[in-house]
Image (tube, rainbow, N blue to C red; front, side):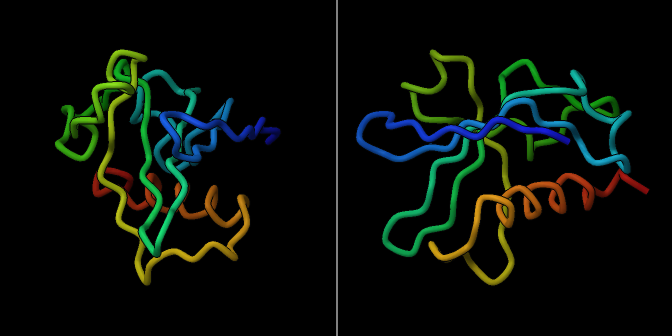
Length: 115
């Protein structure tokens, strides 16, 4: 599916804005709304990227902790919250935006309620 990717500088840090984001088919009925925006703080100094979702996102089977982490204040006021997305094996700058999108898709598809 078509997605718009744009790079943003927010408080001196590089972010990727992704819209629209459609959840993987395995969990398409689990999250509401079904089409959202994503904001990813891109890695610096070997850190992993950090994924933010709209604060209005909720899960149909409870609202698990992985969706409700606190974002920095400058993002909270803009309507974002952080989610817990661990990237197995770390992240390196050489990976493409498509690889990042695939990793995000694997994260959501691998959510325990997906099966």
